[in-house]
Length: 341
Image (cartoon, rainbow, N blue to C red; front, top):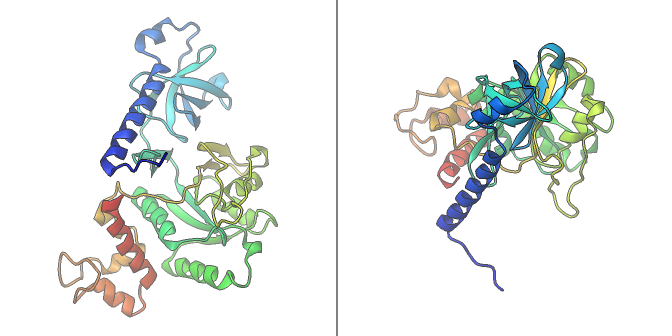
């Protein structure tokens, strides 16, 4: 039987139905106020951190008293806001499963589209974002710029990590080297590392010390291997690139928080090949290109699209070598894709 072609409206309706079913399934396992009152051995309200989110349940690390440093599986109270890895919460101990009763305000959050196209947070309360890429799968500056825009909008300090540096071939090196130089020119820190040889690992450990960081990047760039180097007890499954394809295979299915030996904390997020910034305004997107900022507001026309207009300050800056043409092109492409996404 031939596969039925669905319209965009039909796909949206199907996604909406699936999303409602998912939310109902989670709601069935949540705990109401009446059920809270009936739970036996319900402990006092204490603070904790979400280590992993399974949808209907979460793993919480206790931060106080005898619960400090231990992990507990918890239900969610009915009508509680969705939780993500890194959230600070208030929870109550109970047997066999505890209950999260409140979520504290977030300092920051990283968003991405779920399988239904709806933007959802994937990590919270991070102050550094490590954008991991490699020679293979092929790195794209457009995707890297999306991560940078999101990090700038949230006030999260980014660092670019080129992994598998020992595997760069003669044909790969000029392209990757130019990519590194471009972002260093803009002002971003770039670390060259290799989980296989240990190159740059100590530098990476020092950079992440005393911070809560999140690893992001395409599948197959070696995030899991790096985490195993940073925290040997993690024992994360490591995947390989798809045979005959320049794409990675997903090994991380849910975000998880790890404590690093140097005192830092790391959130591993599932690899993604696309990253949406549809939650951001046009002003936030252009402001996410940090080297554009000195030239903003100096175009001849207030509604300048920075494309072909006369008197465009960004076009003039690109011609004078003050900003990179590829970054200006990426800005236009990202802005043009907003309506489509």
